[in-house]
Length: 407
Image 1 (tube, rainbow, N blue to C red):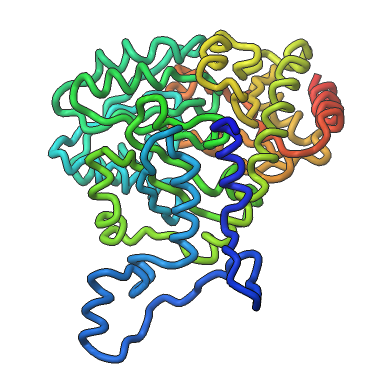
Image 2 (image 1 turned 60 degrees about the vertical axis):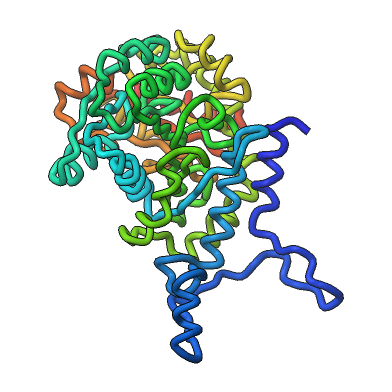
């Protein structure tokens, strides 16, 4: 089997139980919902506090541990050691956990490559800034962006930098970032590289295999995939300094994932390889088809952009299930398209089984000023589609009809 086949198999079989003898066992492990365990005496409690994370849910839980083991397996580089993984109450909590772990180096500056998810910037420039973390923003050009990241990061880094944060596929413009170049630039100054791989998922890209030290996913999105989970995961390479801090920091910060959300995520992971594969193929095809529509001012997707060669090198299995369209007519034009959609629903998130659409200017990037959004190429006419598992012809017909109505 290829490494990609191994990853898909690990997801499909995640959450299952081994055979337990002639009496049989549940095919899927039940959620372990207890928040605390009871013990017969002080010696037993003392021993549990020392060695058994199940003693208290903030320290560990059977459902949570099963999900963490599955996600760590999905991000293990081919032939490499298994990384440390801790699931959290949200993707934002995972980012805070990884920044906290990276800051144990004594450095207090983070370099963030934009465009990126607006919440990343809000967390670093808001609560974490108040606690002494400084942030340098590095803006990539709107087109062909990913190829220049190594040079730009090198210019922004210094010996006070703890962490360089990039997205392999940028939110919301879907540029592809040269992760190996960004990681090399981070390592040159003694920093570590964190890749938010939410848009790609482990089925399309494994950051640790390309030089990254830390990985972040929002479990809320494609991995759980049913719009019923809020969660994140923080992953540290086995040989990274952060791996030694991750468990202790997770316990101290307490931003842990609930067991039921862990169970739901394991449920979603079993179909995630198929969902991501289907959405990825459909998004790429629609990007080509819709580029010629008169209501579309621009299509943002590696299939039609200047990052195609970089995407082919880093993302040979596809660039993910996202598709971003810049609609003619600004916000009014985007609003007309949204109102004309019949089955595609407007939502501020992504990764559902069915296709959804969001408006970055009023959701994920609303904290930026209009001028700041414009500088990044995030216009009021920008619509970001999360492509689901529907038949491509059905989606194409609905999108073309909505764009026709907008014209």
